[in-house]
Length: 510
Image (cartoon, rainbow, N blue to C red; front, side, top):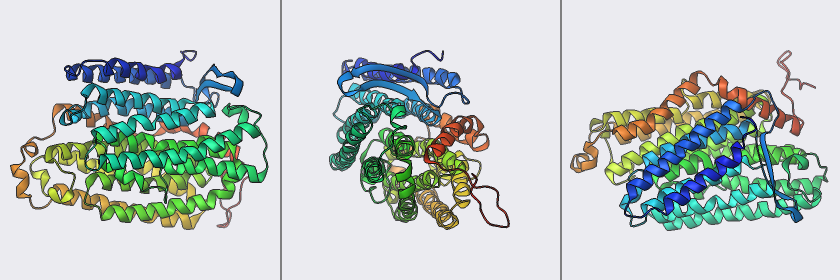
């Protein structure tokens, strides 16, 4: 099975499914949903086979495929996946069917075509798979930009209040970042011997000044996509306006392209520039942890609040990446996965509350748990996972990041720990104001609030809850896949883990 073209098939299959769904008649919305859901399940099954075929102790990049595209420029359709990419591909394969199921009635409230809505979700899946599977830098850039299109229409056509403003802001921010990366991609092609192949480019030498400028071109694009402070302002607007399912994919997967890009491109291609810029990147990440957490505390909109929490969580991922230890790096990659699961669950549950109440404002709830106790319980669990409660998957990630960072930079680890305290504040306050306390009399007049969680919604949340608990107690199957790729990345940068302490003094291993 290792010779099977997993990555190209996984990239193309959702696109074919999207075309089938898009051309179904608008008068058959139920059929469009069923076809989209079935197609996404087929992608999930194929992804599981790919996971089984991956050899954790094998080559760094596996499932490599290469097809000629533009030979005059040295551009190829080259796909390959390391452990980091594999984990993100599995996250996409798990989330998309659940998002489709959770979004079963989302498009019906708009005047837009239901088949088009679900076709856009499948197109988004195709482009997200492509961006993580690409091993040709030009191909990566193409997917990086094309990925914006389906999300733009999901927000702008099917979103809520201020959807067009949010969609344009999202698109412009990402497009500007993409222009910086395009300039860097062209520069890398010139200095790299006119090739876009990732493996070939990791072997080139360049001057210090050239390396730093090219690094910044990539980093700015990835920092906007992630987003890191101060490039974050588009996310609360986009997350707040997007349909809940699209928001779950936006924050749960698409934003990870930024941190994945830093790990796959910035660090191996520009190792000296990465070390030079690391203190500034860590400073931005730490500011983002505290700043976004404080803003989250003051939010009255559930979807914007969850968006701000994600900015804070990306700060932890940034710290883990630029700490340059295997432990922190593994924690950062594991955080990318676990954040996608936990925040995806939280966004989907928030969407269920919003669909029932007809409002995302926390002040419009109050005591909702008395009417929908099971849904409120799932909401509470998702909140606890988001604040990294021990026993949930995000706790393992956060712990690894902080411990791995503490071994090389104690002040940063201590300051970042404040983010945990603030996370408890904004999550528990959100839960308290939404589902606990005195029942808001207005809720009893809302028909939707009389319906607790349905069977379809249970099917949506159950797999995410199971994965969050399972990975919270037994993350080894995932860390075994991640560790070799992280260790190889640290070797690219020329960093090694600190040696055991001797008399309280850290000595770098040689």
